[in-house]
Image 1 (cartoon, helix red, strand yellow):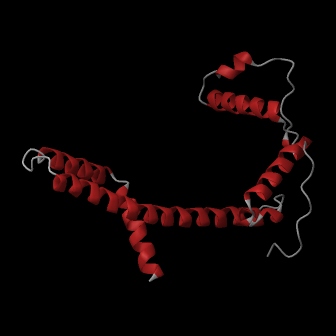
Image 2 (cartoon, rainbow, N blue to C red):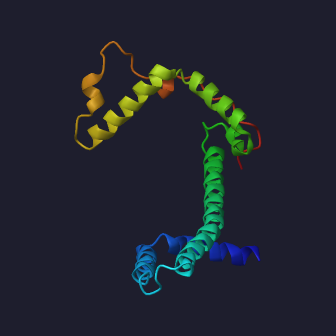
Image 3 (cartoon, rainbow, N blue to C red):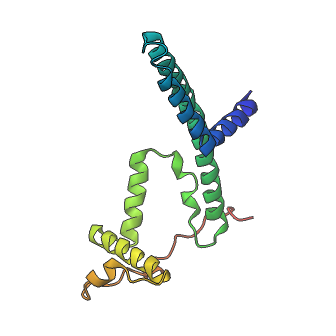
Length: 172
């Protein structure tokens, strides 16, 4: 049953995002609107579109959520594999998606403090990132002109504290 649902949910979610599906939906609404005078804009005429769209929306919520859950789980598995495979990465981060929001926020805050990033520096890092992206494209970034020469550059990776030792037995 699970395999059949997964295949059906994947197919329907993929089909729902296609331009042809959108055009079919627009055509359906247009046909419904054009038939309004034919049915004298009756309650039944209105009920047809309301019921149809409600049923489709209700079912699509579950199908799309299923698809997103699978995509998220697959992404986490891939990220966990990267953490396991990269020598400098800390394997303690594998599985943190199972923690509650408060615990994840505490970890994120601790990592930002470890990296030496405060709120003002976060904004500077965003500006620097935008400038670097635009420079790669051959343009000067808007943040480059506004940069103050007194602001120190963000800490490089070599200036940051070393990663904690990896747990034994995580590499094969």
